[in-house]
Length: 448
Ligand code: F0G
Image (cartoon, rainbow, N blue to C red):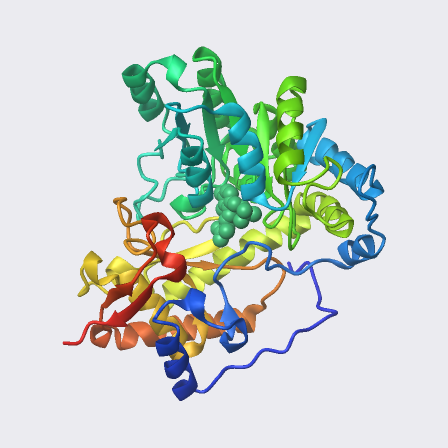
């Protein structure tokens, strides 16, 4: 069932093929360097790119821009308490700001942090505190054909092995990222969350949930975990988050906002630490680097994110794109996750070696062929990790319609049709920080 109609529109245009070719070359075969105006369908990210509702726009206009004691912050506190179940909120300008606030308060040099898979910014903020981020993904997390219902889970076996190795005192923080963005947006079961909670208690660690996509995760739980078959998304979300000592949130995802983030907790001492760090890095605790109107929009967005009609529509659109791509013969990671379809470029462009960046080559062809922008999450983005060559097509929330998806599918099918002719790429220039190279590096086609 469709849950929305459009009441505001934004003009988009498809530049002609010659212009697209020129743009690609000028961008150094890196789509981060393209002007958004030159992109027809933009599936680069689901972060902050969604469409706000009429209720969010109404709240935005009434935003309270007071430096201290803003009414909009109170609305956010109420929404976080109602939707997520936490009484203390430290706002931040976006998710990574919240990560800095939280992990700076929890970590010290030499610590080890466990997570199903650290998202890039999480990994960077853990490392920035001198700690070591260690991934413990589920066994099939990086297997596009595994098909397990909860490939986003934390592997407790892996977590135990790490603790056996380094000792429990070295692991002060265990994180669970729901859904697991780095593993094709796969969900995490509530059972796994309970087990991680128990494990964190065993080793006396703080249990943090990265809740960026908590509502999408809850919807998957309702569909796939028998215990929750008749439980509402709102109730599942609260239950899952209730096991955490703290959540770290990017409001640009399941906050349905264009900006913002926060840390939330019930722990008064952790709250106090985060509040002080928040003042230092983000702003006074009743705005935290956000405009009052953005706080207001996020407060409404959080409530909308757990509405059944919204989140069902959301997952259905991602599933539909996956199904249409599969029908067109495009290999994808199955089942699809919550926010994106991940194309298996290793299979799609099997004649290219990982060193020739098949994922990035596929991304460039999507733009050349149809002005579609996706993002590579393989050898180019993760130089030192043993990851599959995936291309993420992330759907902004409430933004594109079926006709847009049809164009994406036609484009991907056209790329595959001439797949054997697609050339690999080599890096021409890159940043000094290997983990960040995919944002700015420039490449060139490898000539036969
Ligand atoms: N954690 C996860 C799981 C994320 O996916 C992101 C952002 C962050 C933290 C950081 O949040 O961007 O508000 O600072 N992911 C975006 C993406 C950028 O495209 O997947 P942020």
